[in-house]
Image (tube, rainbow, N blue to C red; front, side, top):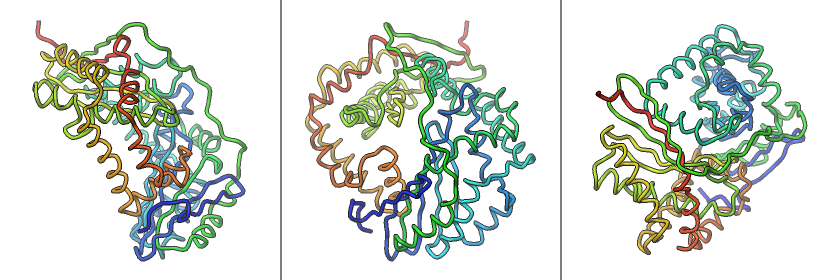
Length: 421
């Protein structure tokens, strides 16, 4: 398959505002779709789980087909369709043989535009979501994350919400609430599709226009208003006991940056060195491998349309908690003080450039990459520029980026088993 470039991708905006990107891949015989609808938990407005409930129910019946009929229609053509609600976007992932794209788009169009929210299916999904909330409430890893979000983000901020929702909210929402949310936020102007496969671009455009061109627009899309995180003045710590467990899980970090921040690439590189590269970077190498204090230890930078958390996560024996926290802080401090060594920086550059090339080896990977490029406004020449962007990240830029990790004002959340005595 040829690479994604401005010359190989056809970009179109339908009259109703839906954005479509098409990348032909002659000879593969299949087609992959990756799409985003900016209708997600960011619009929950104090009702955590509302968007998740809506997105999880879309494929459970439309005005024309029941859930079983949708499943049978997909099986009949050997296709897949997955709708995954998230914090900022609801993802739509689909695959089929190229000849079956019209049938796949028929189903996808119904699911996104005409969900029925049948009562029996709503109750089925409600049960699944509430079960997930209850199971997660007994998971120290999840509890630590939920505590961190409450500690690091202000009331009303999307990143403060529990990712799986609130049981009280999920129990109260009815089918009419789901329909109202869908009608208000699932809109063509908030939607983009990237299609990669063995079809001519003009043919794909015609098919998408036929099935999505009449989806009515509701006007300009925008984020809701919410308070920005405030910088802390000192480290804050919160703990919660989870009965019946033997492992403690911790999350240490602070609100980070968004994908559009000018310092994103240097910060992404700093995070890679800190807790991702190889055996989970310096933190994994020291805290887990060398000192044996953690079952797992890594860092993660959640830079999306919003500034998500930049955190270090670890699972440890409760007797090692304070030592593990001290070791994590020291590894961050050491990178802030010394920066990366030349070999380490070279390895990171090779990894980033090579891993992006690997993502283009399948139609599905290419479709998701193309959708990401559009979602974050990176430009269709992004992959052509990417190697020089990565090679241009300097030692000093990485040091400046990692120094944004607030060691004097981080949030630390711990979920721990009951302690003897």
